[in-house]
Amino acid sequence: MSSPPHPLFHLGMTGWWKIRNEETAYYKPTKPEEPVWPPKFWKFILETVEQPKTEAAFVDSRRFARIRLVNCAAGDMRNTTPLKENGPDPVIDKDILTEEWLTEKLGSKRVPVKALLLDQANISGIGNWVGDELLYHARIHPEQYSNTLSKAQIKQLHASIHHVCGLAVSTLSDSSKYPEEWLFKHRWGKGKKDDPKKLPNGASIKHITVGGRTSAIVPSVQKKTGPVAGDLKGSEAEDEEADGDEEIKPESKLRRGKKSSAKNKEEEADDEEEDAEAAPPVPTPKGKKPAVKREDEEVKPTVIKGDHHEEEEEKPPSKKRKANTNVETNSEVKGQKGKKGKTVGKEPSNERLRSARVSRNGT
Image (cartoon, rainbow, N blue to C red; front, side):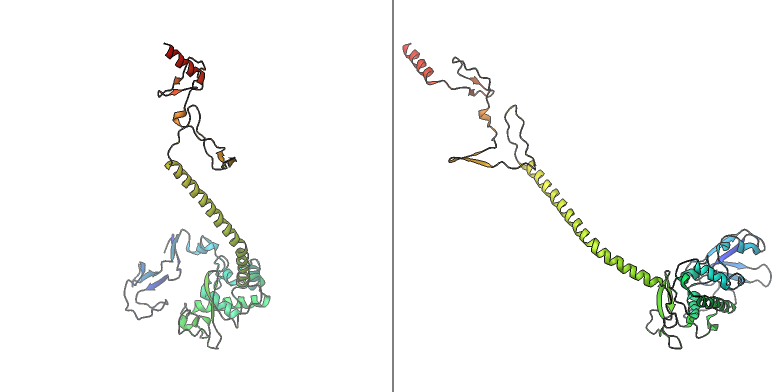
């Protein structure tokens, strides 16, 4: 652009510029494709004002790329967000990325060395395959902690960074121009049956995961010379699993037992409520409250007296025995009638009956 704002492109994994009628380095298709314009997966096209006109298309099949307009002069873009948050570039910042600077950076953190190299806040421009390539050249295991590297390892790592990054940029990332002994040429067969998994010299290639990224290493070359993140995590994980099995299993059994007992109690309570609702009501004496049987109340035992069995628990009186307890004992009153017309009270004695018969015979 001739004036601000200027576009800033992050290519992501599959972002690229294609120029019409020109071949540009890109992921090579598995099958030959006919030249088509606009190209497949294009997002937008730029044209030049000058003649002859040139057209450039930005393509991105996986849509990981990002485009940002930066409102500053073109020469100040690296000193403006977001580029100013990045670390030095191995190709254009050789005066900054020195061996002394790298020694200080590696010693200031305790992380796997590959994770440190992939962090763009530390060093710009190192991606996944570049990180594996330069660590292979430096003969360093990618999981080894950055602050455990020796001076000789750091010196070799510094040289490998500049060598690999410099050659990749100078060839415009055209992999056909990479040396045949590079790991890059033989690392892409993971999971394939016909994958030799070996370098031309016969060294085996192994794939591991470091910092969430698939990493290709050559175990015969990249030895573990210090604490390795993968080994430490593996041992700690085994200890935690062993401790967890001893502590969690009994607890889980107890919890299941508590849940089952609680469930049984609830079922018993529901059954008792259903029985209480289904049972017919029991008549109670007038003026008395019905006795409520509690769940925790024990059943009173039966007391045996002679040949008769008597229960301590009183039975509710029937309706026929309901009577007024304030009946007068006067001999002239034979009894009182209850609410339903039944005679209640004390029965007359034998003497009173005899006197009543004599009086009637005399009359």
